Image (cartoon, rainbow, N blue to C red; front, side, top):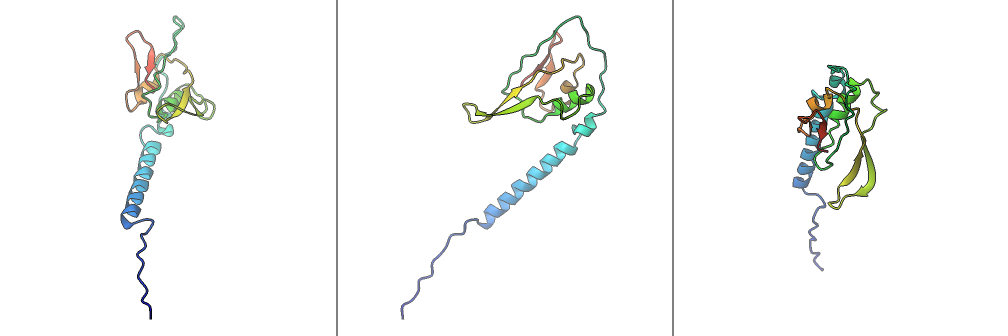
Length: 141
């Protein structure tokens, strides 16, 4: 009788791979819940109101550096809550199918409402939005 050789099959996923995937999935869920339910959630930002009326003395414009923004949308939610703009009416980041030279999706930022007391400055978690000395709200997207 011919003896059959035991073939060793390598599994597609090892136990370690399954644990890594489970850990990454859990971390993603916890992080997304922290952002959506945390202090900068759209519902929490609803309480932010304009602190002063807009000035008509100057006409300000905004230049945006598209290399810094992490895409958290806190500035958008704060602006929408302050200016009573419905959430689905104003989209600041519009995705395009093109990618940059680094292989990252390209987003085109639309101009903001140029508030005198911009709520987006208060809620940006990475400091990418700030007020310059001359009063212009600047964003490092």
